[in-house]
Every structure is written in structure tokens, then in C-alpha cells.
Figure 1 (cartoon, rainbow, N blue to C red):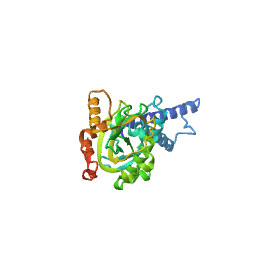
Figure 2 (tube, rainbow, N blue to C red):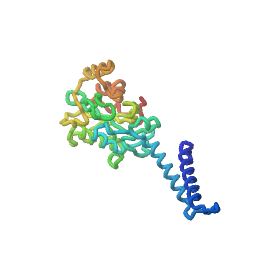
Figure 3 (cartoon, helix red, strand yellow):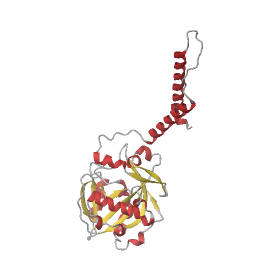
Length: 289
């Protein structure tokens, strides 16, 4: 039994001992002759109590007490979604709630999940950006790429061949956040380029630790954003985005850390080659950032 749980287990044992002594005293005859009580805690009941305490402690370690009363109700509901847990090589190892995956206390222990970032360009080769709503739990109010989210631990979004599950998840979230009709963003129209691995704290409680699939698409789409997800949106040219990134460095506006990392490394080179992206497809590498 691990040392961290030993004090609590011994506390249970001490409690059981005290209960036994109290029963002995209660049943002792006037002559002070010791008589065993008719009902003693059995070994089985002791074991059950100890096992229950161990499970409680494990749950406490896994589920730190976090108050969500002050957060947006709709966004809190989404915390129950099951994300895909992975190791550092993007191998699937299980599932856990969006809440657990985004708590810094769990991230510090190495909890890592799968994610994606979509970049949609229109016919003028301008990039669609969104500003995350103030209701968002991580990085509220920050500007970022078109859509950023997670594939869920469901049969359709677990499909790994050609990242099909991730691309299906992207289609789902493009509709949910931006109101883009599903038929306008089919998975086969998304180009899966590569993956990045990054970690970032949003505040003292929440953060991100993801292996992020980068998906590109060029298409004119219809937009009907959900205000609970998106505060504003805009199309930008390369020059306009560079100006925004300079403002971010001067703390005049905020961008998400993953978007800043991608923009500082790969984005503009990819953008210059929208019609020849195959040369950048790298599905074997995970870029650690």
C-alpha cells in the first residue's frame, strides 16, 4: 500500500479498534470479567472499510475539489465530455473528462490528450480567425485560429487511419462554434499536415497539454457563430496577422499560446504554399514546442 495512503488507513484501523473497545466496555459485567461482544467487526468488514477509504483517497487525488459555480453553465456542461488520453508518442492509453484533462494539477502529473487546430482560408487566401468568448474556461477573450478543440472518445472520432477521427471531430466543432454547415466542411476536404506537442497554463487552475493535429482547408464557408463560443471573428491577410501578433507582443491584445507557437514557426511558410501543401505533410513527426 502506498505511503501516501498509510495515515488514512491507520486512522480507519484506529477507529475500528476504538469501536471494539467501546463495545467491550459496554458489555462488561459488574464483576469486571471480560466478555467478548456478540457482534464484533469482522475481518471482511474491516477490509471493506479500508478499501473504501483507499478508493476515496484515490478519487480525491484524481479529482481535486474545483469550484465551477462562477463559470458559464454551458461551458461547465462541456467539461463532462470524454477526451482521448495519449502518451507522448500519441498512442491512445485511455479516456478522461475534459475537466480532468484541463486541470493544471493533473497536467503537472503528465496528463496529455489529443486535440486539433483548424485553419480555414477563403478564396482570397485570407485566414479566418476567431476571438474566444469570455465564457470560455481556458484562454477567454484570446484571438486564435479558425477552430481549436478535441476529438472525443467515441467510435467515429477514435479512427486513427489518416487522422479520420480527428477530421470528423473538426467538422463537428466547426458547426458547433462557427455554425458552418457540415456539408461545407467534409473531412476529405481537410489537409492533415502534422502534429505539435505543447503545454500552457491559462490561469492558476486551468491549462492545456495537448498533441495538436494541424488541419488546413481553403473554402468560402457560411458563418453563424455561437456567441457562447466566439466573441468575434474576422478574415485577415498575412500582413494583418503579423500586425496583430506584434500587438500581442506589446500586450495590446491576447492570442492563444498554441496559435502563437504555430504562427512563429510554420504558419506563414504553409500559407505561402496553400496550393502545394503536400510537401509539408509530415505524419511521422511530433514537433515539441
